[in-house]
Image (cartoon, rainbow, N blue to C red; front, top):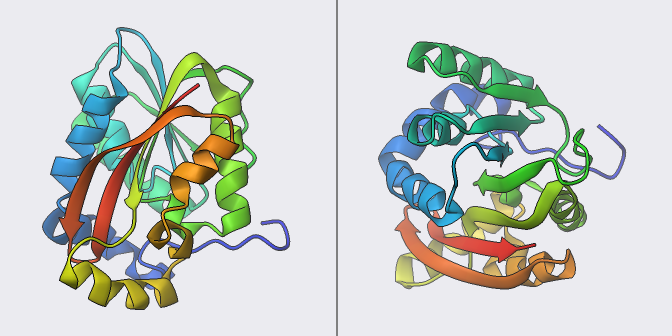
Length: 213
C-alpha cells in the first residue's frame, strides 16, 4: 500500500471480517439496497460489469445471478474477503472474476466496462483516495457507461443524526455526511449525477448515487 493511503478493513478491524456478511444481512437491509443498485444499473445483455470494492462478493454474485450472460468482475484490496468471496461464488455455482488490487489504481484498460457498481466501499477511503477512485471509475467506463454507488449520505432522521458522529470516528464518512460524494463524482467527469433512493439503516442513511459518462 502506497504511503499517505489508508485502508480500513470491513467492520474496521480485521478480526471482525467474518461477521461482515451476517451484519449486512440482518441490520443493513443489504438485500433491498443491492437489488435496487442492480436495477438502477440498467444492464443490457452481455455487458461487462465491475463491482468496485466487492468485499465478500455478495453484490458480484447477485449481478451474475440476475444477468447470467454478463461478464462480472469484482475487485478488492483485502485478500481475506476475496477468499470468502471465491468460496461463496463456488457454492452459488456462478462464474465471476475476483481481482486483488487498489480501487484508485485500477488494473484495467480505458473503457473496459459498461457499468461500475460499488456498495459500501467509498466510506473506507480517504478524501484523496475517493476522488482518485472516482477518476479511475470514469476512466475504465465506456462512453455512455454508468456508475452506481450505494454508500452513506447526509443523515436523515433523528437516529441517523445521533449515530453520525460515532460513524465519523470509526470510518471516513465526513465527506458523505456533508453531501460531497455527488460533487466528487462531478469533479471526476460524471454527468447527470443524482441520488435515486435513500435507505434508513442502523448505522445511518444510505444513498444510491448514479452518474453517467
